[in-house]
Length: 312
Image (cartoon, rainbow, N blue to C red):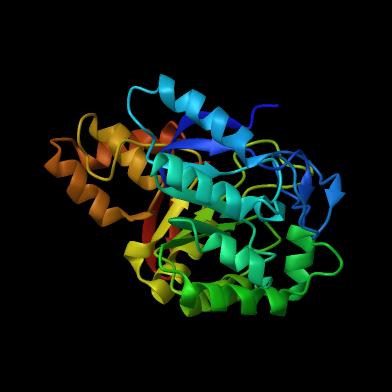
């Protein structure tokens, strides 16, 4: 198997060169929405998988062919990256040899372990999974290893967030009918406020999930979650991840494509959309009605306000 791949475009990380430091599929969770499928090796035991020098060699081979270096070297494997006992050695080796920023996407489940916190401290950006607030929902959506405890995981996340000097972001995957209840979302938002991430992403499954019954949150529930998160953390720190990698956040270039890009990241109040489309020289009423008929967008009401959001 390839231990390094890319670079690939990422709205969170720019051009990201990926590292696959875990074989498929060693993980501490067996999330119902996982695009890799059900976990074959459910474990919380850290072990050695690959020689750090082999990972470095594959990364160097890719970078030699790149026109320009990636923005991040990102640990995003076919399992939970912190199960790798050599993670700290790999991070140190890559930093010393390449001097490029390091990122890692973790499910947060092993942050109660001091050696895991020590390894993650070497990274420039850490992304933490926070899908649930209640024990019941956590077990239903993440299906954790039997020895894991949610309260212990939360304590580990809190401690790490206070000690970590890099960029901390979170990702919450919303599954319709599981963690889309307002109380659950409010609980997640209140916990995120405690750890104060630089950015909190709200995501939905965009690839075939491990369980066929899994459905992405509805547009209505995405707007609801976005607004609840925004009230808790501030609007500038919240973004949606719905599968569309757009060109930016202004109506530059093609204004309609730019608008769709924005709506995939942030639900927009309809009066703001009217204003932006008018400035771009378009008839806002006609444009919005056309996009609604084409089922490119949805009109959603939440707490007396009307929002436009990109249709999933």
